[in-house]
Image (cartoon, rainbow over all chains, first blue to last red; front, side):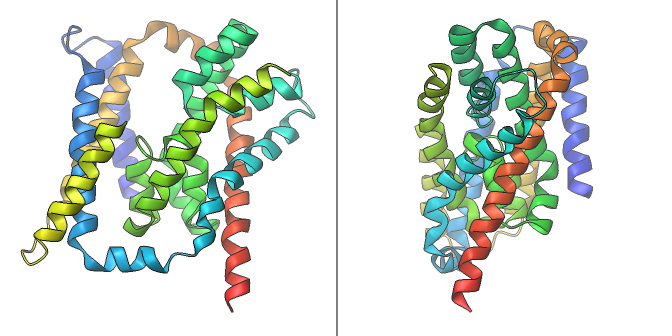
Length: 199
Length: 89
């Protein structure tokens, strides 16, 4: 909880810095993020490789984590099936939006193209929310549901933006599961979004 | 995407090689990078005026969709995790 507050306050500080243009606008923050991400991944890799226990623990993981991406997809779709009971949007629209799995840049562009600006905007926000939910609630998910739950919640983002919080809450031995999951989900987003938009 | 993975595998390799030397500060460095990345995410989001305005318009519906989508996958993952546990014992 202490680290969640720390994380939230850094995010809030960033928002303020962005809104009031305190830092030079010509700085390429996306590039900075990429560089920091690389350094982060190197450190994470280092901590995995450095502890012999981590690799042993991964070997002890049950083999059915292979099915985790499929589980994430089915669970997500069942979730929005419940939304369709009281939403003004059609079921296929909702399925398309949810098939972004947190990959908001790509899914919102695709959906704007297929279904228009309104649903595209919904896709952008809903998938940002999914990422924020994962970042903030991962500790609760890991404690009250299962250690695989933060990975399922993270969707396509589990190999980049939500990766740090996942290994922090579920443990370093879930790092490889998280990357495998993010990898498969990343590739399925364009196909599944297109599938539901064309129906 | 692949460059990022490459960095991680390089880290694993170097970590394995340097197993005999103790590094206790690695976890603190990881937290530092996490905080820096979130600061950067905030900066990019805060500077995007269009995105901030859209937040008020369709935010509520998006919130509901995201909530149920996330909940569905979280529960499904718990079921997958539990299936194995009961089989094992």
